[in-house]
Amino acid sequence: MDAPHPVKEIKTYPFYIKATVILLGLILFFFALKVLGDILMPVSMACLLAILLNPLNNKLERRVPRGLAAFISVMIAVGVGGIVLYFLSTQIASFSETIPALKARSMLIATDTQQWIYHRFGIGTDKQMEIVKNAIQGSQAYVGQTLNTILGITSIVVLIPIYVYFLLYYKPLILDFLFQVFAEKDSLRVAEVLSETKTSIQSFIVGLMIEMVIVSAMNSAALLALGVRSAILIGFIGGLLNILPYLGGLVAIALPILMATVTKEGYSTQLGILASYLVIQFIDNNIIMTKIVSSKVQINALISIIIVLMGGALWGFSGMFLSIPFVAILKIICDRVEPLKPWGHLLGEKIPEVHAGVKFQAQWARIFKRREKKAALEQKEHTE
Image (cartoon, rainbow, N blue to C red; front, side, top):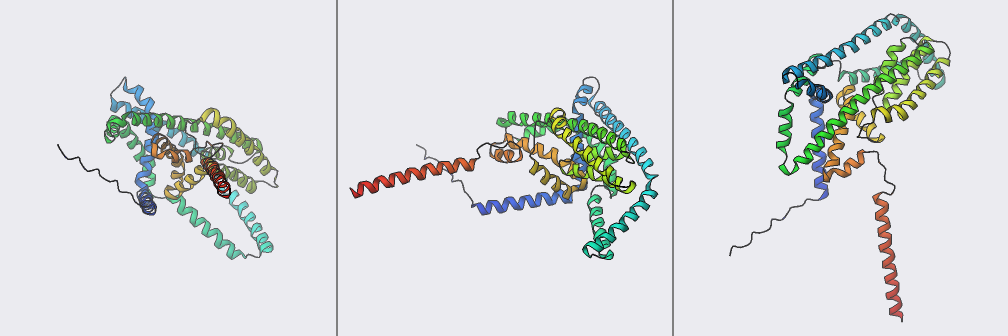
């Protein structure tokens, strides 16, 4: 009779060692994202665009070869992007004609503001200029992560369409790789995660695009009614910034108020802009977001703000726009993998009526009460 095989003991490590290893891994991961940002940012954008174009590509593949279907899909996306860029270029050209007048008015307002700050707070003009200069330098470095490099411009114009084409063309190869990486018993779960990710991201991106168009139209209409210069351009920028949760809305309101302050006397226009944008934000949050965007993956406000700021720190404005879709993908994965479900719950916005801490407190209270009752009975029996 063969001797039984010895049971291997599973080695466990203390919590502080596990936490240190996880923290070190996260630091290395985000460091790699930072260093490789110029390469990974266009690839990430291309992945989202490829997911968005996938339904169109699938329909074309039924009629033409895969390579031609991917090429047509990319060309359609490039054409739509070209129309948007042409519209923006015409608006920017008309805005540039007003720059001299805006500059003169801005200098007058800046001088009055400097004098007011000096008399009110005692801060000299030299110190004020130093503060403004530092702020401008910081913002230039921030924006420079996306736009101020040749590779960044090339990525937007050339690399992203090329990446989208190859992602659509090699889609069967990529899917086959994902299924082969995981065990056969997990194939059903992998298929479920991929299907839900594709559906959620498609609905999320399409919904955001529709929301951007509607909000841009409402912004432009309100600004045109109030007589704000470059109303269509500022309204479109506000709709684009509105994609960024919570933070984008604040910047979107600040831009037309600043324009009105520079170009108009008094404060009635600014108050009108503030009231109009608050109404638009109310309509957006309570009607457009719930009826049109209707993403299957909802991220809570706290995580949204943190992740947008982290995306901005990593990859500039592009990182801010990419952060929410990728956190949505992360939540889908966490919701489908058993050990990661608490993290998926943390990312979501469903608040439990009674959280686990209250349940444990109630359980400990019952145990403590039983112990007290048992101790009282034992004391009573001992005295008798």
